[in-house]
Image (cartoon, rainbow, N blue to C red; front, side):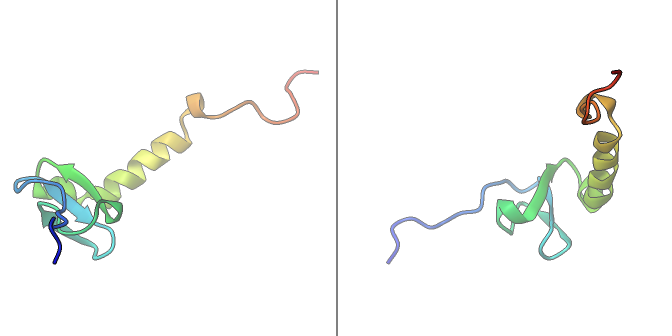
Length: 75
């Protein structure tokens, strides 16, 4: 018999998007490794993948995150 019950961290009223089941959850139902969140509303959680795509695109095109091309520059 286990002395401690393993519990998923989070509270009702916090919304998550489960990457494994591709669904929105109120209070986490799935492990943290399988979810995005918490979000303030169900609507925000429903758009989690879209938000992630937009942020990834912004980061990929942000000049602050790109090094100078290999091989130097002006020679």
